[in-house]
Image 1 (cartoon, one colour):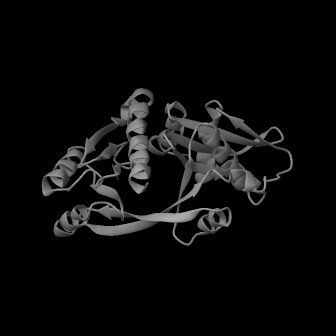
Image 2 (cartoon, one colour; image 1 turned 90 degrees about the horizontal axis):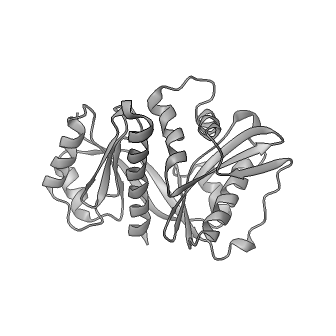
Image 3 (cartoon, one colour; image 1 turned 60 degrees about the vertical axis):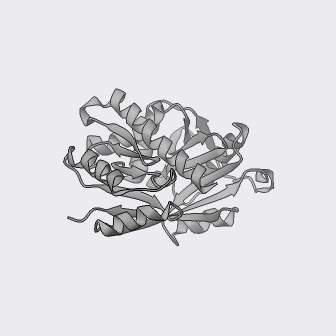
Length: 260
């Protein structure tokens, strides 16, 4: 199960590169499969620029990491990996020998969608959730993450590119006629991946985030998914909220960075 979840994560990264290449060619986005995972470049400063899902296709060798380092060094940026704790132990040994360090961690949680009908439907006054919105989705979600600042291209592109990914569906929440927040869903075989959800500051505290999550889970189940997965900061409010509705920690991921 963990391997399938990580492959879904890697596939999303690959699709992001394809979308960015078409939509924002000036970013020179590119993705490359290495050791069962995807090295994604989305701009030197982009938080998307890292390797995903490595270590689920057999032993990881120094040669694999050298190939990864060459990929990023040729684009004048640091080598960063997002590694699952259940990846082949060889990747941790090789990274340790090469001097990599853990810079951050996050949790991946999952729940079965089989018992979704048992969840209480969120009630938010004047709420409407639109599936498959237009370009305004990217602006709304970006503002929810980064309110009151003008985003550089490499950040703005992250949100707008999700609209063009074939396996993803975007959801936009309205309170009355006002856009209030949004979120994305990736459908990968039996996995429904919940990501990039935010609510505008003036609409927070009304249950919109929970309603967006519920709507995406419903859609994922109708699309044939058996499980939903979300990403949270360890021991955060977001993690506590999804645990309340049946999510359980599936595994931990480590952001590992090359020595300077």
